[in-house]
Image (spheres, rainbow, N blue to C red):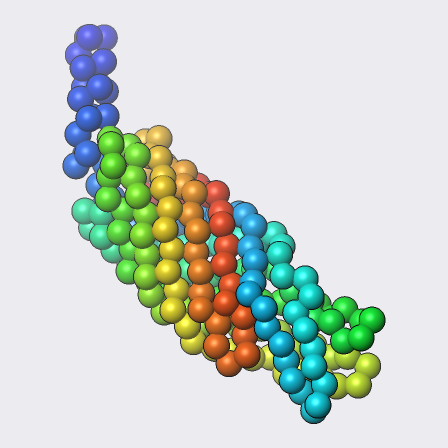
Length: 184
């Protein structure tokens, strides 16, 4: 019986189709995010993005069928800081997205991750001593790449890079994360 179990385990490692994602999933990721430059010109005041690298996290949920599917997600990039003279003003930035996702197997439980879709980037409002800057939203392209490892058919870990293209005076923002996921 032990030999049969060992043969089944080794055979499943070499059978890439056995690890194709099918069904709903949910995942959580944490990591490091960064932004491109962004300046705000408000009532002849120039505010420059000062602190653009910080801790971030995201959660994604979706459904897959044989390695291809759809994903909804929320990513919190953390607070960024604009500089006005000697004053630093923090504000939050996050995105929500809808993306097509593919997770083809490379070798047994090791797989690649690719996604492309639509994201809405949001930056919160903030005030300086002299002006108030309202919150902003912008639509942008979301794309991501990564690699993952399935421990069991229902549990996996992955390393991924994700980027949202900024518009409407919002910066392009990215995040590199490590996370865990659960498929049902």
